[in-house]
Image (tube, rainbow, N blue to C red; front, top):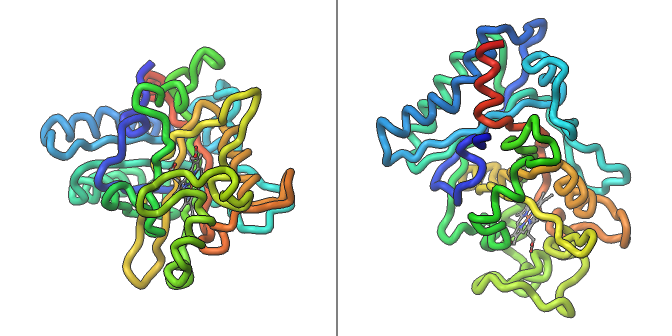
Length: 308
Ligand code: HEM
């Protein structure tokens, strides 16, 4: 089974993330299903015509929307974005049915592809949020810290991000979670670097993990590194910075995983005093304003929609 192209490769220079929802009273029909199933082929064809673009795509569907497209058969762990009991930082859930992740080396191609997509599906789906994002030098987030260092190596990514034998009918698919975070840049930039490093749990310039003894339990890294049965829970993050100078800006967080459990556990340890009474101090400087959970089926399973 072939994963959709945007999931596994190392970061591109640009991305556009689209969240859409069903128009009131409209149901997905065979015309929409056939169109959506053609997205991987359409992005591949454009890339082949203009190889310098490296256009890639991944399209996913919410638990609510799923039955309209795929009927009763569904991935074993497909469910809504988690509601975290006792959360003291916001982790809002956005009502969105479809997620489209577009990435490329050229922003103009992404813009055109996304515009055409919105136009083609407008009878059924309306945009909730469209976010253009970009890679900064060394993969640094707007906080100035390198983001993605501890992502799995390329060779290990499929094992982390893709459903395998545990759910063979949906092998090659992936559970994706998104959250748009808005950073409080003025407040963050006023912090001394040593304090910023204690909040992230890594050094800023050299991007090294702080030794365990120097790393507060409230550091971002301390919250999201979780061991279960002797192994660390892993995600494949494809997050990128977004926004405009002086306006809303921050991190568009995106993770792909073979199960939704890892993201859910990490988020719970960030926003709620779950087990040790601590939360993530990074969230004093950044706030989630959207959140969504989707399943991105393999290309073969998506293509089967056209025939249904
Ligand atoms: C404001 C939003 C966020 C920012 C700015 C941010 C930034 C960072 C940075 C700078 C690192 C260290 C470098 C690296 O290994 O990538 C990191 C690591 C990580 N983050 Fe985040 N992150 C954010 C949200 C999240 C969320 C929502 C999750 C999951 C629920 C998450 C999961 C992880 C994981 C798993 C690691 C790797 C930890 C390790 O193995 O050392 N992050 N993040």
